[in-house]
Length: 420
Image (cartoon, rainbow, N blue to C red):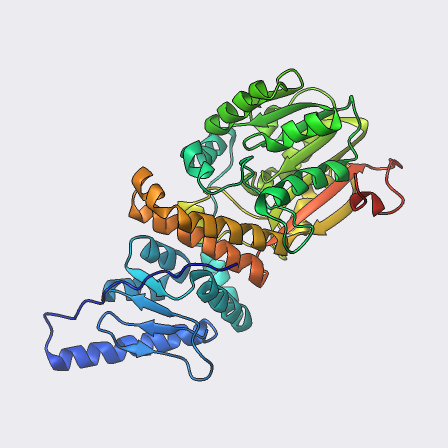
């Protein structure tokens, strides 16, 4: 999918320094840049100083140019790149000339080849622990991201307002059809039957709950703590004549009550926090019937790690994508059996490609709603997410489970792919 280019801002001149001082300072700064590029694995990008001087690693054709607009920004970037690249891009002190996702992919790939460094990892763990996800703090964290206005999300999501990874059965599937295909894919994995009861933890704008009720004849209770999303979902249920079969509840996953044939959570686990996984497992264990089954769909990682410091600060406070090993602390204490695991990483990269293109098309309207810093912040968030999934820094796991000893499992996986 073709993407627009981010424009390079004008470069100011240095002032207030003698030529000798300028020469010494620039030489030192170029040494810093050289070391920074080496530490990053020498990605094929050109770094541009505020006075127009450039530095490009030897070998290969640069995929883009990163402009550092002032000296203070350079030092902040060298000291804490995980946080300060996003901060600088958001406020315009860093800019990119070229296709933003492609530039970020190049940086991510170079970083992967360079290795993360154990000392740096330990330092980041001390400095940037995710905000806690207590009951009260979870509400604050969710409101920060999801309650910034339905009209904002309506500008660039699909018609059903699905804000999770889509499923693309073919190369040319549209985003609208891919999101519907994802909803149905989840339902098939859960093997829903008419008359069953389903509980959904973290229901977004309600698309999955409504799809399950309409197409599979189940009764759904869906929990959410986002006021904006709940209002939208309830209005849609009323308008579509499904309010008697889908109940949208303002509540956290810890507040789920009742007994159900199936549990489902799509895009919530990232906000739970690893420390609370056993509590989530206890909740599922308490509410799931003897022959019940469940599905958890979550962004994840190949190994445990923290969310990028800038993303945690500006976009998703309290978020932490888990590894599969960490996810097992949901299932093992409650004696659940994992019966199917699928990784849809490249489907999420394609989903984000669609979102990014749509977002770029409406940035003028986003600026009217918020401001230019917000526009740039979300542009970088979407572009960086594309890069993370393309490079494999992030994964997308769908895990299906049931109670230990339950033999209500399909003999093959054909049921997932045959025509419904």
